[in-house]
Image (cartoon, rainbow, N blue to C red; front, side, top):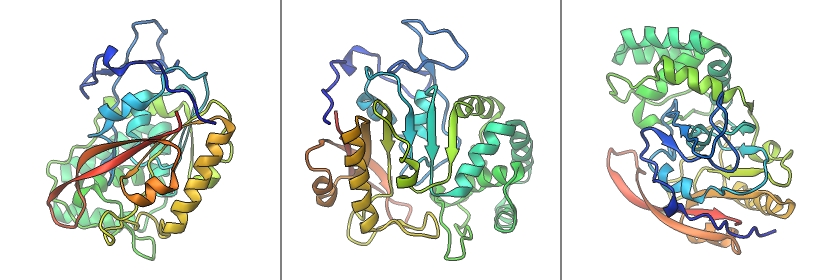
Length: 310
């Protein structure tokens, strides 16, 4: 199924500045408020930094979100920092990620954000090079808890480039990033994130299992690990397993299945021939993005592609 492109004109809505609010999209309204024609969704900043995150691209990405489909479930199977989820704040969502540590962090923010906040305040008061490595060691030995969620956020905010990387034993091994003072989420952000997450089902699954329950009229946003931009720069150490070329092929098959059952699909990836070939017949839009794509602290402008079936 190929959806007709919405007649909504992005130029008719004020551009999002990333500071205050976003337009209301396809019947999703600010949580805990009555809907009105002029109601706008107040921004919730992402709790985390994330390699390949969409924070700087968000104002452009919003333009591709359909405004007019029937009510369905928002689904995001490569959650990461969840920039689009926290921007839209849908009333019904299924959020998933193969990284169980990430999902556990969001679950504890949702269920006990006050405890997470208390632990983050302790990290903020002790933060240093030595504290980072002590926290990293403790993190690799500790079970899931509110304290562990706070460690996850603290390490994310102070590690090199916000990367989440594990070794073959599943141990977080990213070095210190000299981010002092760390931009830890405050009480208000944690509370608002908790409220938004209460409207979502959180699961730690691979993308194919996470999308098995998708139905007609659902809106699916996919931001998978990108293929290599130069043949070698392939960041795959996100979990103990690796996201390979065969995974890219399998994802393409899943996306085509979603299209056939009537889901609206929005996807972001690297703008390379492989991706254009895998999604031939879909709509493409290429966008320039500035990123760190090497281990050196050097920014590069690369091109990403927005793919839709509408």
